[in-house]
Length: 498
Image (cartoon, helix red, strand yellow):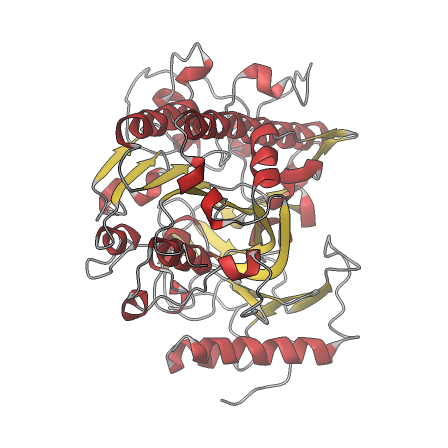
């Protein structure tokens, strides 16, 4: 590891809502039809795939907070603008002599004063995703399906307006984002650089070119539910549910195609000897699994939290280390890793020696890739913010080597005190409210990867141990008593003391 500190350039690519099982033909659209990803499969074969990567803070904005700081921010931060006093990756890297650039089409980290661009030497916001207030015409927009099947008619209309008049694939937002990043590389590849590229797709609304959809569901003539209501999937017919899986796979394939375009530019410019490329996501999405669509539950102007099962908590993570670091190709690493570890790895590769003074809590991943197991996480913790207590169905996912504990506080089934609002999952304020059964659950991922058989009654010992590790982890992070106390008393578990 003598090259660390002179590890050269770093490209960090995030694709929002990109499920881990899209890789390696595991995502089934219907029957024998599976998602296909040419370029990310190639990146995996050239790099190291961390097969047990989990997000920490959930969802979009809190995830970027973890990614930009290397901290588990769920103990003290929720969906909100980037705090002015936080020192983030671009600021830390600038001190190490890096030119830093952001190219992003994810709106929530940039619009309405969220300022996640702060600290970058340059940044480009590719406009038009979801509820970005970008265009006001055409005034008349035809909805793709019955309005009651849409999570938000207003957002669907805004997205259609934003992207009106597209003709060629280069007109789609992932293409624009990739081309913007590639142009920047052409002009700056002789610099020592950190390039951050943030694709919002395959986040819904799903609107890939029709020829991508035809790869997965040709001949479909039903309604196009491109922005589905979050919650139980029973409102969709079998054909509609299969089609939204096709739309999702098509959009993932579109993103893959344009990530490939960017990677080809890296190769054309001869950068791989001196450049580390990282690909990851913030979370996944339910497409009928567990009887759900979405990643939370939204009913009108109310929102509740859904459990974070594997389809949402487990994320892809591929790192193609710079050739000069001497890391093998096509490696699989099964150690538990989390989002703050990505930031820690970027900083270590860049030779930032004082990351500890900024409170970085992640750990360096290169030793794991080299087979030098210098550390191992006993659990991965994935959760919405805990800063305001346990409410509205909030549950924490605690993952170990083979177990997944969906942990519900005794307070989780309660509504928020008074009328408390949340801005997740899209920056639109909604009242917090619990929906459905809210309970602690336990699954063995080795024998039951789809999490269909709750074993908490048979293996209470495992659940109690994972609960203990979770509480210990909160204390290690320095969580305050107000954060820890609601989790001492959890449903179906014995009360704890700290």
